Amino acid sequence: MIRRLPVVPTLVVLCAAGLMIGLGFWQIARLHQKEAMLARYGAAQHDPQPVAWPGDAESARRVYYRHSMIRCASAEDFGAVAGRNAAGTPGWAHVARCVLANGGGAARVVLGWSDNPATIGWPGGTVQGIIAPGPRLVADPPLAGLAANARPDPREIPNNHLSYAVQWFLFATTALVIYTIALRRRPG
Image 1 (tube, rainbow, N blue to C red):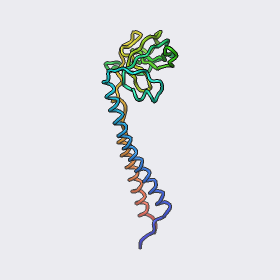
Image 2 (cartoon, rainbow, N blue to C red):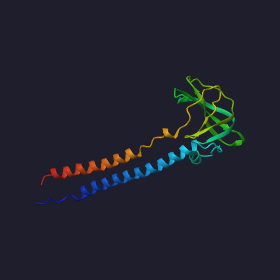
Image 3 (cartoon, one colour):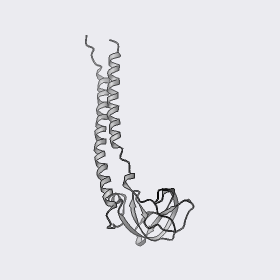
Image 4 (cartoon, rainbow, N blue to C red):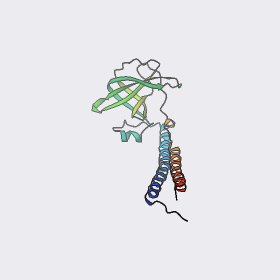
């Protein structure tokens, strides 16, 4: 005798599994988008032509890892965050908020690296460097008597989308297997 499938629970499980499979394929699409973005950032590292400092976050994403220069009328909000120097030694990256000359807004600047988190002072001036995510300008050469920071590297940006896709496919498979087992053990 063939047992009838419960309609509502079956629909719920099939919809959930379908949604999980859809999320898996979405993660695969994101994987390809991220690979293209990382390739673009990798190429930008080798472009010697400097660009203007971007005015907003969206513009900044288009020029990450490119060289730029700003004129800092004054610096404020000094601090130190965990960072690495050019040799890879852990320590402190010293950052400041730079008020741009000519009313151009503000920019976050990584002035340089030290093994001491004590606040440093820097009056402002010209900053050359590399635009990194944030956005922030990583000074190259370093300023305020600090050592060079590690250069921003797009290879540090994780690309986990394939593992996320596999997880979603496994979740869907698990849901279907558990539901099948539950249906077989259901009293007759």
